[in-house]
Image 1 (cartoon, rainbow, N blue to C red):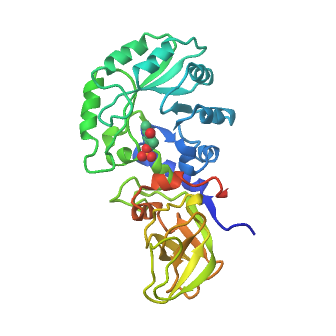
Image 2: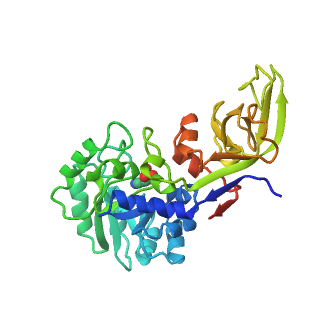
Image 3: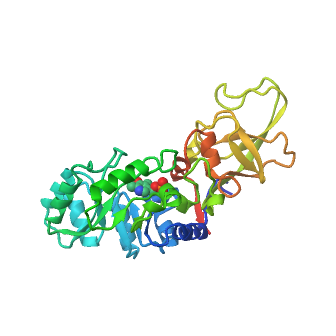
Length: 355
Ligand SMILES: *Cc1c(COP(=O)(O)O)cnc(C)c1O
């Protein structure tokens, strides 16, 4: 027997979640976002389960090339574009599209001789203030690109900062529409939150990420009510049980002290597995199918759960850290973070299996 931690990933959930995207945006081409090792789900495995997508979006050229080598023929978009002329040559040879978000990148394209054409997602900064041309220079960037022989298909693109919150997409949509109204190209705007809540963002290309993995992008609406199924279940087992007396602590530091006799399960999962060290007391854990919570500081390899009210729980009892039966969003909310961060932090030492 090895250490009992594991991540089990449902390929069926991934493809069913992809169908949910189509339900929301039936007329859009779906660029499944598989950056960060498909949000921790495994690049090639996830891409396989999502092969019904019209394309994929990710960051690293090396990953894009792995997809091409594995035989994926769909559109592939590099979300930060290229970082060198060598990369530009490679994308043109492999039919990979790039985001172009600054004049420096246009200059780089201008200065390189490539074989094929390069498809471009021209990014407009409509208020996120991360990547993209400001609306007032966007037309000039487009004109410049149109003059380059090496440029293939062009897609007009932007990204929303607040589609998951109360501010919504209205202001950014207005900026984008004003900047692009006279431009006759397909558009790509929506992430998961936008495509679910704002029909006007379901343009030619949509870019769902988190919803494919079965997590809700919203704090006020859960995945189940959106028809999404969690793809990843992170689980382990209790490997020791401690009877703790009043006044005694648990694990490192002063984070928890018992004020009554307690029964504590020690679960083989710690921050070196990707579980957040800053999880507070009471972060939800499913032990033997019943909800309880963590107590004390999460350590590198272990965490403690309260099993005082669970006489049947003992060494060997399963603990689900998130996934089936315990939404990763709930664990993330307890830890003051978002599901994205937990999913993509899954450590390489955690064995992954697919079903
Ligand atoms: C990550 C990312 C997405 C996907 O966002 P989700 O919230 O996971 O749906 C879409 N577009 C861009 C540019 C991204 O970086």
